[in-house]
Image (tube, rainbow, N blue to C red; front, side, top):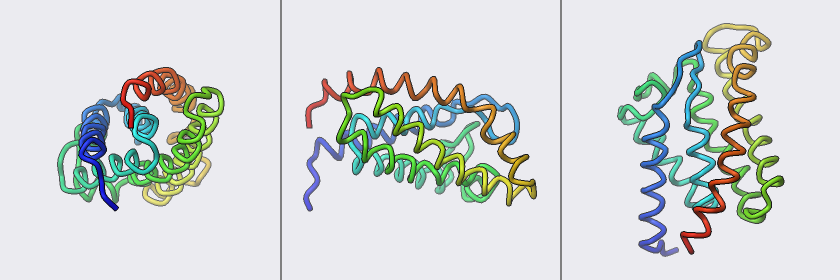
Length: 174
């Protein structure tokens, strides 16, 4: 498999976008509101599943290496093993699942919104399970602090990506 220079460049660029937007967060409890999921969905929308997911993996590896790319300008293995680690790792399946649909229906906004919302619930499940384990909380309590405060904000980010994503994709022909 050969990777085109353009694809490689855009993958790195979207990884940088995730790294720039990821640390921007609002600490409201053990799980902050961040722009990471917005950036991940945008990467998948613009690049497609494969290159978009590679952008996410690059972001995760940079954070794992200690660069302050995670929420609150944090990084390192401790962040991935901490209470929000499940959400961070969950960006990969979220990107894959939404990307499969977005690749096929990128210009059908409602279908893409539904795919992004469904994949967000997969992220919520993974993240909340890990949060519950790490903080020794009953799952219901972890759900209350790790999901409920984010449902509306995440839906707003999803709708924003469904508007911005196709416009950027049209201007970057692959």
